[in-house]
Length: 51
Image 1 (cartoon, helix red, strand yellow):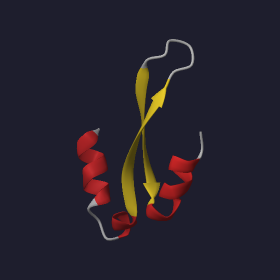
Image 2 (tube, helix red, strand yellow; image 1 turned 90 degrees about the vertical axis):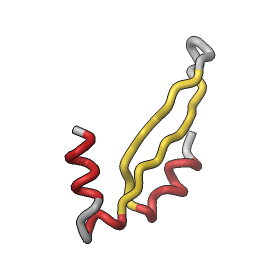
Image 3 (cartoon, one colour; image 1 turned 120 degrees about the vertical axis):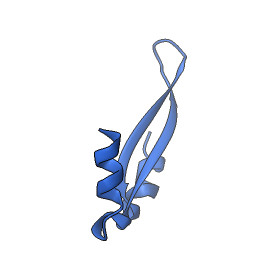
Image 4 (cartoon, one colour; image 1 turned 30 degrees about the horizontal axis):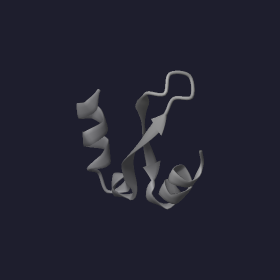
Protein backbone atom coordinates (compact mmCIF):
# COMPACT_ATOMS: atom_id res chain seq x y z
CA UNK A 1 0.00 0.00 0.00
CA UNK A 2 2.80 2.43 0.78
CA UNK A 3 4.28 1.96 -2.66
CA UNK A 4 1.00 2.97 -4.28
CA UNK A 5 0.72 6.13 -2.17
CA UNK A 6 4.30 7.16 -2.87
CA UNK A 7 3.86 6.58 -6.61
CA UNK A 8 0.67 8.67 -6.62
CA UNK A 9 2.30 11.53 -4.73
CA UNK A 10 5.19 11.72 -7.20
CA UNK A 11 2.94 12.52 -10.17
CA UNK A 12 2.43 16.13 -11.30
CA UNK A 13 -0.99 16.46 -9.68
CA UNK A 14 0.25 14.69 -6.55
CA UNK A 15 2.78 17.40 -5.73
CA UNK A 16 -0.01 19.46 -4.16
CA UNK A 17 -0.60 16.81 -1.47
CA UNK A 18 1.31 16.24 1.75
CA UNK A 19 1.26 13.58 4.46
CA UNK A 20 0.62 15.04 7.90
CA UNK A 21 1.08 13.29 11.24
CA UNK A 22 -0.44 14.63 14.44
CA UNK A 23 0.15 13.28 17.95
CA UNK A 24 -3.06 13.19 20.03
CA UNK A 25 -3.66 12.22 23.62
CA UNK A 26 -6.36 9.58 24.18
CA UNK A 27 -8.88 10.76 26.81
CA UNK A 28 -9.69 7.16 27.75
CA UNK A 29 -6.21 5.80 28.49
CA UNK A 30 -4.04 8.91 28.56
CA UNK A 31 -1.64 7.37 26.04
CA UNK A 32 -0.51 9.17 22.93
CA UNK A 33 -1.42 7.96 19.46
CA UNK A 34 -0.77 9.31 15.99
CA UNK A 35 -3.26 10.44 13.35
CA UNK A 36 -1.96 10.31 9.78
CA UNK A 37 -3.68 11.75 6.74
CA UNK A 38 -2.81 12.75 3.21
CA UNK A 39 -4.23 16.20 2.55
CA UNK A 40 -4.03 18.98 0.01
CA UNK A 41 -1.40 21.46 1.15
CA UNK A 42 -4.04 24.19 1.56
CA UNK A 43 -5.86 22.16 4.25
CA UNK A 44 -2.85 21.45 6.49
CA UNK A 45 -3.45 24.41 8.81
CA UNK A 46 -7.07 23.35 9.36
CA UNK A 47 -5.96 19.81 10.21
CA UNK A 48 -3.65 21.00 12.97
CA UNK A 49 -6.10 23.62 14.31
CA UNK A 50 -9.04 21.27 14.93
CA UNK A 51 -9.02 19.20 18.10
